[in-house]
Amino acid sequence: MEVKALEKPKFDVDQMISASHASKNFGEIRKRAKIVPQLITDNGTADTILMGYEYYELLYQRLMELEEKEEARILEERIERLEKDPSVAVSWREVRREV
Image (cartoon, rainbow, N blue to C red; front, side, top):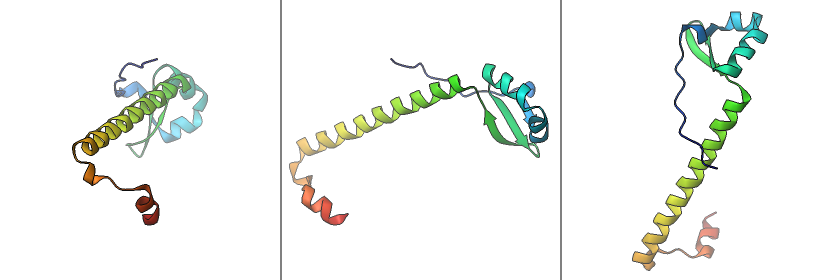
């Protein structure tokens, strides 16, 4: 299952909450975060993002897909390099000795 690219959340004034307000109204903030991520600020500076679990799952799944694609790309690149020039190959014994 391929996940579509997610856009970086943009926070409007209604989503920016001071840490003190968030601590006093956590239940309300938590409910809002299930709809749209909330930005908690500390002394006016972005500090924490509160988001619903479903959104987190989407982010995590997309991250895993991207990491798998990057690993596959690196492996393909290395295989191509070895096919072009087998002399760059390193034996497993040499790799184990270095560790």
